[in-house]
Image (spheres, rainbow, N blue to C red):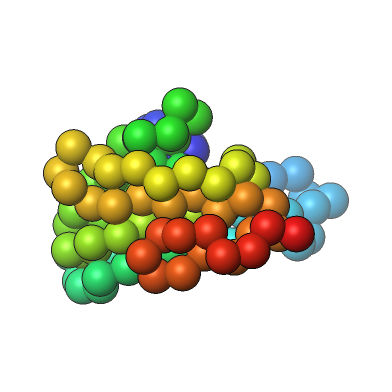
Length: 116
């Protein structure tokens, strides 16, 4: 979970401490951004757009850690899904945020073009 103290240092650490009958990493962990990757991204990546699954802090179920990542990489716009409701907002830093609805399509201006 963004912002929490990590339980595991990385994927290898997770696999080392899981029960021996678990041989494969669950998909929700396999495709997560691990803490060390998050820190590396903040230092090394530059991008205008950040596309993520979870929401930043302007959403009531969002995470401040994602605001920090967007600010660190110089993003001007965040697009996210997960909550399945279209909205358009702005972080206090001025970064534009668009949440896509389930089955929805948005353009780079954050406007909803299609909702299935």
